[in-house]
Image (cartoon, rainbow, N blue to C red; front, side, top):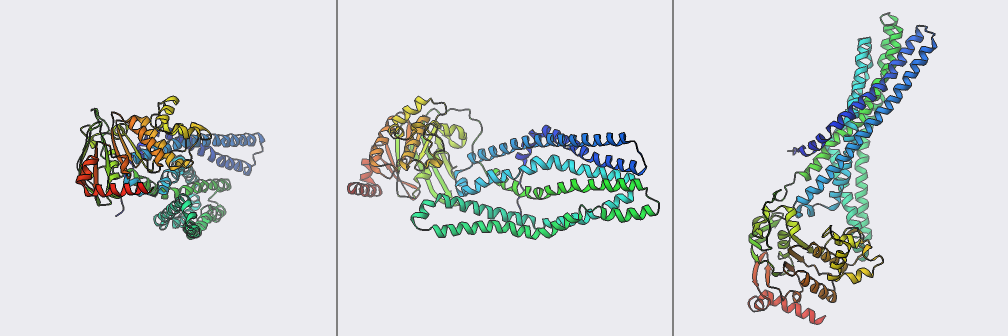
Length: 578
């Protein structure tokens, strides 16, 4: 059964612009009125000529009226289009903001499960696809339907038989045009799927170009991209090939109003039941019926697509948010952290099995264990990137599900081994930790974090632009910038998830020393594979297969935990070899 989507969020956005839409539609209607006026005036000119009127001032005045009507049509059309585009681009911006805000509220797992190319496609291309519908169809479709209706009504007023004759080809043309919408949903969904695959393949190819070159996979990877590009093009070509017959038939028949008017009009004129002047007037007016309808037909495809586009956007908007309140009356007075019987899973596979953990305010604790044991998952849950499946996490004695995301994010500084840097200067990337920080404060925190020296050796110092995702810097440099950014945030709870993974031993010691100074009187949770860097913390939690296997100081764990002892001895052996 096809899911029905609730577009309340979109209706609310449109409702805010309702007044401007009314003005735009009104201007469009006036534009069509002035566009139709010349047909009536030309008809009047022809009637006067047939009746032998030789007062050329009359014709001159009528021509001036035609010119004024045409200029008025251009004026009101431009007013309508300007207003509709202005409010539409404002609406598209609002929709994008809503999507971005929605992603902020969603669990990290949902965002990571969707390829970045697909999300980019929804937020950029799909939202842009709504521009024609919102900017053009609402005002112009209304106006262009009204114009032909007025002409047809007038034709019935002149002669109902000729009015019917002018419409003979319209039903046939519409039926032919409707043939283009056969299997419309299936075809359009196919283009969306193939376009997504192309976007994802392109992003994968570009992001993986280094690995492709190193391992000699250029040809196979390029072939995959070429195949995706070909399928992306073929689905559109096949669709157009299916539609071309219907389109050609419709475009040939719809404008052919004279097919019915000329033979029937001549017959009625010869019988004396139709005046020649009326016949000529009807011929001229009939040309004004189809042009606006053809303009409307251009929107028919967009109207058919809009349901699919909105459904795709709604599929993101209607995902379940993390359970967080909007308001928070309480205050987090300390950075105690407590996990009570926490369970969590990815795609219905449980990876944490009843975690109990307590971290006192101001303490430094470490999470250690084999790869895949659940350490980073615990850190992400505490940082508010996911909701727990079962159990509760308390920060400062308050359940995280009762803390708004904004409040929790301000309270916590989270640094992982893959921290993202924006394509901004180093100064602005660090300042993201505290947008109100002065240049001096940014540089002070960089010095304390051990970043200042390498920053000053760069071409533009603090003004050096780091490139997309920080690509102009090394992995270690990106991590040090990320740590400086987290330190500038001055949060009460600091989480370092393999935050020194890419640094060499010399810089790691420098960073550890800086972090130790900056984290005084703060609660810190550290995840590290290099056990020598965390042996002096207040408590070490040994995580194994999603459970807390042991928890104590370094010295006590060497005595009581075989897993920890084995990990320590393996670490020391590797360190000695180095």
